[in-house]
Image (cartoon, rainbow, N blue to C red):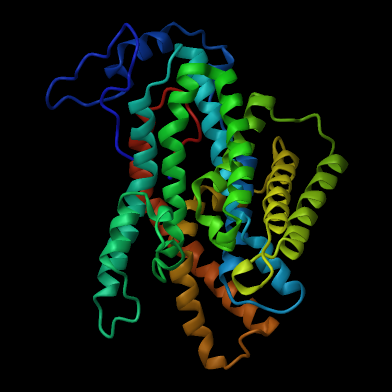
Length: 403
């Protein structure tokens, strides 16, 4: 998903300032380093925390977003496309779950949170590809006849991670318009580490409940904004709260006790919840009249229940195909590239002269876009993102997914 906070490492022991030219690693923070060295290797928090099944879920969340932004169809195709928009909600839930679990383990292991190390890790994972995409959008915008123009203001609000706070959010550009969601991520990263650092599980639980209540109040008070509420931080924090609450309740347990039938039932129930939400909650509401506070509450309540149910069904699932795990690993690139690949796919499908809303056109455009996304994201992950991810591991207090 942010500027570092130079004075946010509080406590009686202040980390020594590294010598000029010295490399900054976990060892640059004596309190953290000594706690890691003293921790027994058998401690739960000392183990690598990685759930490969969540990578697979991440890929399907992306697939939903791709279908949502692709060509619209009629009937069931429209419902699938509409429900796919909640793939972004699943991304937020996933992110909150993983970040909360890692921060809680760090606090248990070291009795604090190295806020600056957290920001370094997040920046190394998010910023390189993010700013590269912005740079590419600027270059493309300058190519005549300027079909894909993007304003300087749009670039500025994206670069500063406040894109969702502006009226530009729904129209930031053909290639990077979806990156407003990274602003939401960065805003969560800004406030969540200090909450867990100061109050641990109890304060994290209280904050999550506050997020839920705030989202409900915001939806009711500002219901006149209609579908534009989708871009509001308090509304989207509802999904971060759901992910954090799941992390607090399960505390890293993979839920292996759930039988296959139970998992299947939860998965189907979650999917049905999202589809019904898309139908009764007027999603995507930008194309439909009759938005009311009740429908907005149905939309977001159904979305959080559906995403949460699917997440619980998948958590702890074993024997995940490796290809799905890999697709999940490169899902950030898939998300960043998918609008551009949809544009390219529509141009490639244009000679076939298919009706815009036909099932054949939907299948052809989405399938081509998916293949193009996989190719681009694979190259990006292997040759561009991975070096930054390896550097990121040097700042890890709790080891997670290996690069």
